Image (cartoon, rainbow, N blue to C red; front, side, top):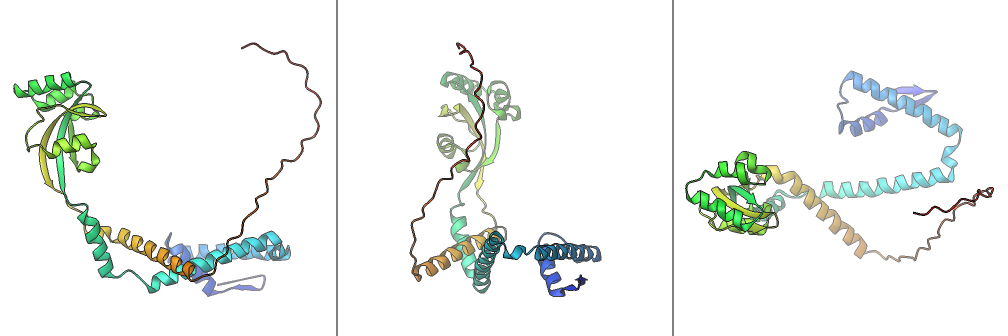
Length: 262
């Protein structure tokens, strides 16, 4: 794709870089291809300068290259193992069923009025029993941020609420308000249960990417444990020496200062 001071940049190199960039941006346009060639030309010029300075012989550079090599080889082994052992559709479906089983249950739609004492909560309940409007009472008496919306909390699952609140809601009838104040760490609540419904778990298509990633992580861990169990490993004790700070140049004595009383 280009020749720089007699050194060719192969199409294979171009394709490899293009493949890496394709994961982040579109490289299929003529403009993008030209920009990539320009980038490779600049990189080649820098590599040639590095070769002139014999940087590849520098011990520190050698060590860094070795680290890059080790990381590349290790990650390639993992990628190949995963490509040859992709999670089966049956395994994904089984994991989905296990995950969604825990998501089944009830969802609740409720509103509440939050006050700072049991007596105030009982006063609210007394007004409701006389026919008071729950939303209006919430707007005037509730200290919660939901007060402006008439105490509306929207739809929620029990796990989203503190246990005393969730337990109280689960025992209520739809359309009824709690006739006894419910205490939580936030204060005293009067709750109105507006509606209930069965919780709907996400579909298989929605959860599939997360399940695949989870199964692949487990596969990698199992593979590493297998390699480890079949290897002879001897861990040596590492002696860590503390770096001593460089001695500071001797300074002239500072003028004597008077001690201030605080």
